[in-house]
Length: 280
Image (cartoon, rainbow, N blue to C red; front, side, top):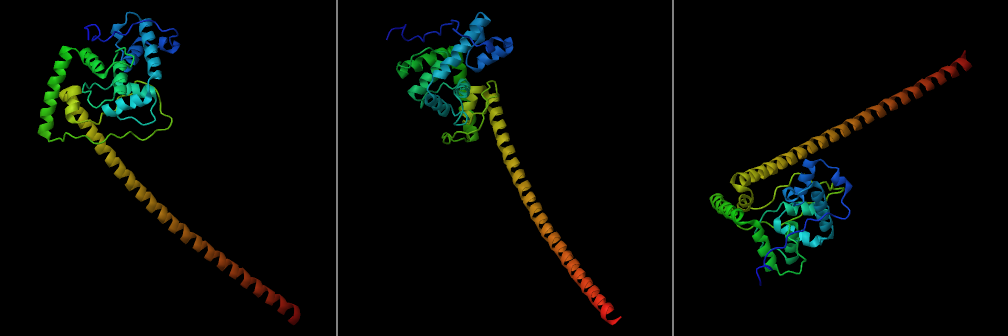
């Protein structure tokens, strides 16, 4: 294979035919942030129009992607998303995946990952070439820093005694009326501490792990509090039901007494009227 064929083709920066008017109306900082969410680098584009066109083309590319291939990347990257997430939501999570360990990723998922990392490919390239392009895009210094973080991550994982095997990936429960707005904070990745340190550094990986453990503990305590509140409410409902039963029984008793008293008064009045009529 020639040297030219081993080079990843650069994505051409050409204006889209019908750029979205809404994108053009966004403030500069919001537009750049949105472009970064979709895996674009605003500094690579000379003008605002070029950035809007590139963002529009990226969204068009996402719309044509195979959803099952995107789910392959989500499972490989262990990103916490719901199974009914839209293509744009899946793409946002895929962009947040920084791992370079491509083992276990399907060929179709490799194509999606390469496209969202700015590599223009048709999907007919062999996986070895796609893997080479993705690794070449990382750069020497970034690769060196990642390997250094990986070494620190392995050392920390060994100190903590963390197992190498990861639990089976599961999608989040399906959510109704999911918002499709990009820019929401990324959900924590359910990976090992070694992988987290490799991707985010020592402090970032430890902070992510501590945050996830704290969130898990908080959710557990909230569930316990909710169950206690439910038990208290059930007990209150039961006591109110008993009180209502007693109140109804008392009112029925009063009604009975009132009826019997009315009958007695009517009988006495009838006897009195009879005596007065015939014996007076």
